[in-house]
Amino acid sequence: MQIILSKFIEPGNRIELQKVRRLKGEEDSNQKVYVSQLIDVISDDRIEIAMPMEKSKLILLPIDSVYDLYFYTRNGLYQCHARVVDRYKANNMFLVQLDLTSNLRKHQRREYYRFSCALEMNSRPLKEEEVQAIEKDVDLLSSDILIPGLPLQKSVIADISGGGLRFVADYAYEVDSLILCKYRLWIDGESKEYTLYGKVLGVKEVDKRPGSFEHRVQYVHMDKDNREEIIKYIFNEERKTLKMMNKDAYYSR
Image (tube, rainbow, N blue to C red; front, side):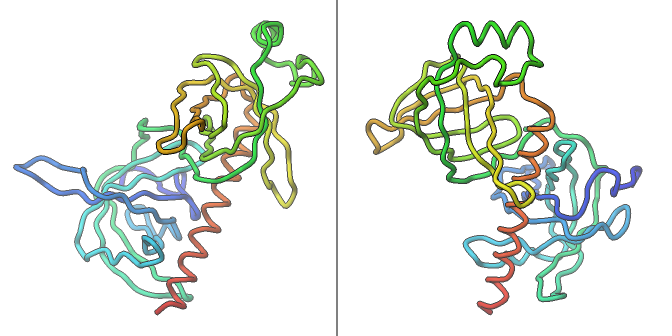
């Protein structure tokens, strides 16, 4: 490889794998996507990952099969091709070794991985004077510009990322409106409340649930530290999930 892998990826990074086929001389990546976790960077062209799972069942990747890999890191999304060279069990974990067959490159498919969850959230539309205050000075703290005492509406976050979130509520906001979002995350052993601004990108009624509406929201004027903490929360939750899945697979054998 022409780059040092450890500068860009690190153990614990979430990985998506998509098998690569070749049709009439062209690559076809229209395949099922599996989720895994980077365990170790063995060398500049070899990595070790957790055996991917689906519905608590191990997915035994065939030796010599080639996959498109996507690494979700703190610095963005990276992509490369890799070939399966070995499978084994160590320290009660089922592992796979892959040799990278292309250079690692920054990928712009999506900057932030969306983590599925069910978190309570309170929100309300921003008033015109609040919007004007934000646009005038984006460095102002929320407490400096928000009108106190205005009622909040309850909803449930269905997925969250460093760039936005998706939530379901029994009301519908206007598309392109700016809203206030308040929710709590467990960060470094403590529950922390986040007060963020978001732009409503889309709204649709949930299938077979009349009166429930799904909202897609993009954060606006977001503090860098808040974004990094949210990404950290997502990575930590993913690690817990993958660890538990691997543990369940071990005891089910």
